[in-house]
Amino acid sequence: MSTSLANRFRLPMAKTLRVIHLVFIFVFVLNTVLFWQQGQLFSHGYRTSHLSHLESVITRIESKAQYKIDNLRYLKRIFVESMDDPLFPGAAIVPSEIDDGSGNNRLWVGDLPLPNVITEDSAFPGQEAFEVRQELYALRKIQSLFPLASGANELTADLYYISREGEFIVSLSQEVNSLLISSYNPHEKQGSFVLASPLLNPQREPFWTRQNIAQSNDTLINGAIPVDYRGNWIGLLGIAFNNDSVQKFLASSLPEGTQSAYQLYDEQLKPLTGVVGDINHFQLSAKQLSTIRQTLEVSSRGTIRDGTVFITFGKVVGTQSVVVSTQTLSQGLHEGFGRFSILLVVMWVIFVLFLWGSHKVICRLVRNMGSLQREMQHHALHDDLTGALNRRGFFARTSQISPNYVDYTIVQLDLDHFKRVNDVYGHLVGDNMLVHATGRIQRAIRNQDILGRIGGEEFCIYLPNSDLKAGIMVATRIKWELESSGLMLEDGSLLPITASLGIASHSEYPENSLDQIQALADMRMYTAKERGRNQVCWQYDDVIQA
Image (tube, rainbow, N blue to C red; front, side, top):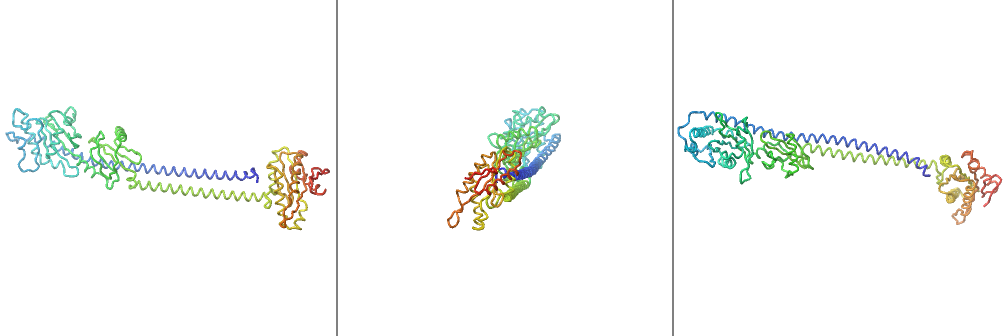
């Protein structure tokens, strides 16, 4: 089949495949977008879940911290009321004699770099000595409440009092007492002690501070409240938490079965505790800390996704601290949202594989149908024996292209004595003769010429863009090809092949149609037969013999 005729069937098939490709691409994109949107919902739910867990941790820390501050408020009120109690001994004593000898709940009195006794009038003359004694005895009176305020729960702390005039520190723990002495110095106005001054704290509100202990890695987290007596600032009542205490409390505040690592930082994002929870050994980079710091300037909560790590953080109101939660991909896969995400990805992969398989199967079916259609079309337009166009295919092809050419020539050909060959040698030899003759004719014509078997032993050749003279030359060449190569029989003998040919050109009768030109060539072929066969005839009265 010629290229143009084949394209008539290939083009619809190509369009069909193109439509199939576009449909499958559309379905793939649509479902991918839907899966992506579902993934975004999971991502939003994952982020919300982590913020909720973080909020729960922060709420527990804030609740316990507020509880401690409320205890301080209560102790402050009792302490001030105790200072107004007139039942004081008449003589002042040294601080070391405050203990009642029982050894229980002893008040440790730590001295700052000033006189270590209060019995010398030169140290605390007049009214000041009396007020110092009032402070000490008021503390002695309320010392039984210190353990209650400190608490024996997961947030273990040590309660303390720092005197402003007497410049001493009192607590239940000698260890904490010594740590506080190295941190506070009211005489030198160092440390966070000055945050309780009326100038910096006119509302007399409680506050939280972080103190690094000199020459050590220890840190004290302090919640403190200023103490005023008769309008004067006399001291600071506070509660101190060490690193271990805060870390234990942070661990106890985590959701059950958490798959994240938590850590507490100060307002400068310096670690206050070690990592607790499901430890993943992930360390925040300087860039991530900077991002957290910038986010907290405009919001109290936030999240960051950095590669395979999801970071959640939030401020702890009132304590000037920040809780940071980190979760790696492997940890997240053990949570509900992680498992749902895996399921979503698996479903998407299964859908893509199913879609790809369906696309391959449908395209193969369409191509097979196209091949079958082309094969059927080929059989409908071609002669099964010789492979040349049959009568229908020949006239369909020539009528399609003839308007494109001003001149064309038709050569009509009939094999001589073909019926006798069938009768003498059999139809098999006759078929072989037709195949052999078709091959010799095709050798004699050009590529653009069209050959068709329009009858039993009748052939027609369409010569586009040619006149009568060119047709005569082609017909003569065909005649010579046929008679110069006979058909080899089984016994080795040659069976000669000759043909009678008639020629008609459109240039002879420009007003005639293709059918009329073919009919004229057919008439001239019969003229060649009547005049003895094996001839080329292009006029009724003029025959050239090879």
